[in-house]
Amino acid sequence: MGIVTPFPARAPLQVAFDRMELQRILDLYGRMVTAGHWRDYAIQFGKEAAIFACFRRAAERPEYRIEKRPSLRQRQGEWALIAENGVVLKRGHELGPVLAPVERKLLKLVEK
Image (cartoon, rainbow, N blue to C red; front, side):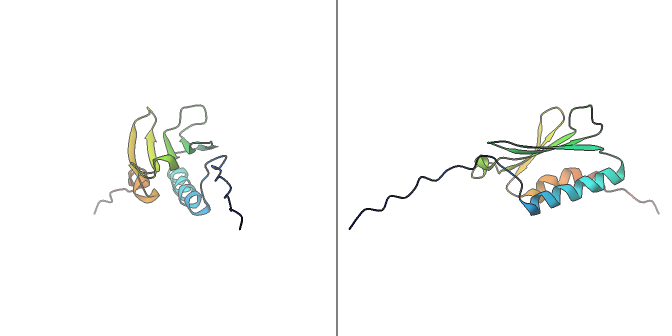
């Protein structure tokens, strides 16, 4: 009988957010817009990473970048929250805990 040779697996041409990830990110973005913190966003899909950038104003550097890097899945985690100055604020395997520092900005103390 003949030998079956499998096709080589191709890497995806670009990294993207799936529907649930994008829904979670856009939900946070909408709440931050309502609170007056953000006014604009940008999405970039590349070969190594998918990036969601949040801006206070359109002409500035992004206040936060939410990055998905599947190549780091087995190491530090594929998700990263990066500040305006390029410092990694949070890195993890799941999106929820990575977004937690930004969601804390929405909490307000209520006086009695």
